[in-house]
Length: 118
Image 1 (tube, rainbow, N blue to C red):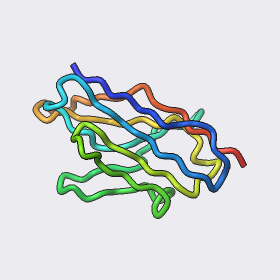
Image 2 (image 1 turned 90 degrees about the vertical axis):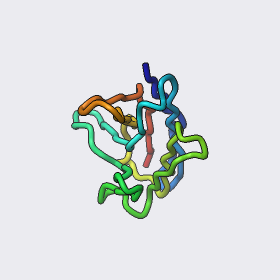
Image 3 (image 1 turned 135 degrees about the horizontal axis):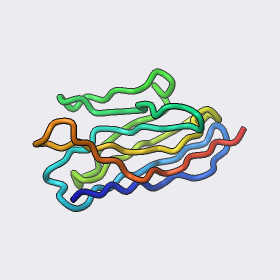
């Protein structure tokens, strides 16, 4: 079993910063954390930032230059540093992991709420 736990969300004023953390536990050898997604009320979940197979990073156009995804020293941790936050960044943020051994098996955390006030 694999569990993902996101943390670090909260209420912040526009222009502020937050750092989200995603920690995997359980059979972490069997998974890799691949990225961060978000879902705003009434909208579909969307990709925010991710790692490519070669280790490079990818960002949604809406967050380029403001957000940065990184891995912790422990391979089971991934961060999302968010800066210059805007009200439209308000959403529940989720990290996603995939199985290393079985196709199309995804894992999600419970999400962490980020609210940006204007």
